[in-house]
Length: 134
Image 1 (cartoon, helix red, strand yellow):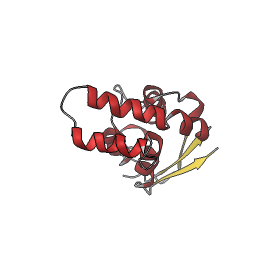
Image 2 (cartoon, helix red, strand yellow; image 1 turned 90 degrees about the horizontal axis):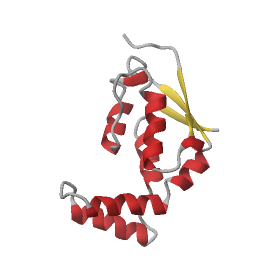
Image 3 (spheres, rainbow, N blue to C red; image 1 turned 45 degrees about the vertical axis):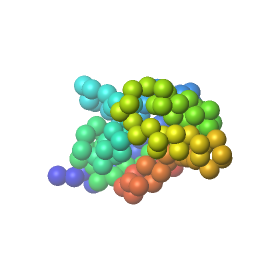
Image 4 (spheres, rainbow, N blue to C red; image 1 turned 180 degrees about the vertical axis):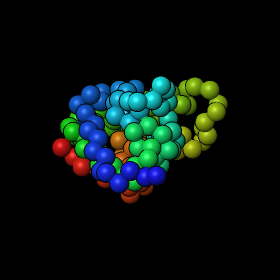
């Protein structure tokens, strides 16, 4: 049975300084009552937002109040994104290297998405999650 009561979650954007701290905050907000944590994966974040586990389980939707969102936007901006993509290229071969290289080239040309923008696109793809900035 789905809980009709509105779920309000508060994301502390000021706690985000890099990608690991972003996931730490995601886990604090969305996985507080779980005995496991969400991994550092945008696919895992997307899956979690469907609501099968974590605090979203059993709820029809939620309002996410993202405090200090500008701080998060800056922290997850071009430099952080460049380092994230480069680490994928420098790491093992499990990633689609040509695709990642293309993302890095687009970012350097001012046309690529930052990590922050990718996260916001993922959130926007889940209409049951309403994001308010504070």
